[in-house]
Length: 117
Image (cartoon, rainbow, N blue to C red; front, side, top):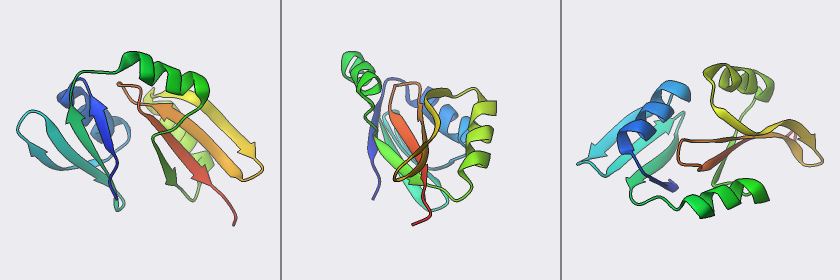
């Protein structure tokens, strides 16, 4: 599966995902669509008019757009913090596992999660 994120500026989003989160660009279709991946996980990016109010409300209400399961979440968190990415939920331990959330430049929310089970 590949979630599709709506983005205002395709070039800016590709740069964020490839330089900040170290995804690879799989393909780019014209000036409005691209696919990126990291370790077998993919996201599609589609340029369109932003939904700013909706995106900001997601952050306030703790919603996420996609969750990536990771093994060494503390190391991933430290690496993401070093990149300057916007942390919208700092690393925390919950009854179901350990997690943190970041926002991309268009306020799409990405969760990173680890659980023993």
